[in-house]
Length: 83
Image (cartoon, rainbow, N blue to C red; front, side):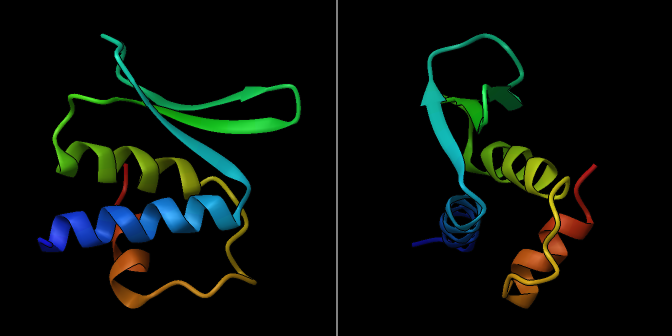
């Protein structure tokens, strides 16, 4: 598994810990964080490359309180560098 795919998997796991559902769907939209009722979701175009998927998830989880969640250094770096 490549470094990008490993990072993507770790970000997906972090999102799950934060009760954020990650969905990959066919869409022409950029994708990102949305909310339906009390459920937060990250929707990403399934055909997007792994770098893009990683960036979208990192940008979304950055908006949540991460102080009580263990995050590996490489995942933390990805989140901190997210736009």
